[in-house]
Amino acid sequence: MWSDSEDAIIGGDLTAALAYATPAGGAVLTPVAPLGLRDRSAATVGFTTSLGFGRKLDRIKANPRVALAYHAREHGFATAPGVVIVQGTASYDAHPDREVLESRVRPASTRFLGAPRTGFFWGRWLSAYYEDRVLVNVRVQRTISWPDGACEGEPAVAGEPLPAHDPPPQAAPRNGSAPRVDVERAARRVGRLEHALLAWIGADGLPLVAPVGVTGTSSAGIALRGPLPGGGQRAGLLAHSYEAQLVGLEVRQYTGWLQDGIYAPHTENGFRAPANKTLLLLVNGLMARRGLKRARALGRG
Image (tube, rainbow, N blue to C red; front, side, top):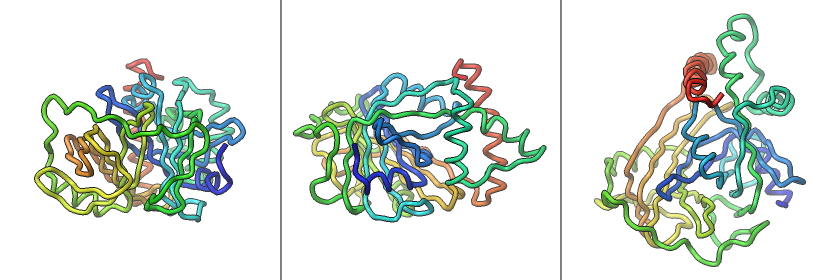
């Protein structure tokens, strides 16, 4: 379905940005580990996540239309420039086949993230971290790609044609469209991280994602450059950076209102992972135990 050059990016990027819909008609962006998982002949791609991240999985279950943005080359295996957006329908099994995880996910994870820690302590400490893995499969409807990171000009499209027009303007939020978090602080946090992307819902109901850059601020919000829609749209903003094997991952996530290139942030979340692999695994083990316990209490796993 997609080209050889696109397949090299899909199969080689260490991380991708997942966009999924919110009940209010907006979009949220979060980084995921695709691990090169894809089946070109079946037109599917995949990524892994944790049962402990229940909101993401609940939103996918409620509205499985998603997009994955393959946009970053560092620390992976793809080398050519460009951005590939994959749109489609996601599905997952909250009780995954352990044999599938061992045969497909474990080798892919080792390739991108390094060999798993073994031994008595690590086997016990990371048992929940490995046990709560979920494989999400996306049946691809369309790929959209540009040969460079600026995403200028007309993209190459494979699969279903793009809608002929931008999505219609949305009704402004009930509490108003003005910024609700500090604009200057948000702009600084986004601007100092390596990658920034914006997501919104397209005219056909599938999320769209575009790399963006910060060009200024005002009382109305953050001025962004990039291939953005006109009119008013609920939109999600993601900024992130990371080191090899996803050590030192730093993430800033926002939801807000996009009006003709000006983004008014309404909510803000973020985290910074340890830059030391051993410390990161200790934290991952602790968070996985808590997350798996919570997921089981809610019937997710």
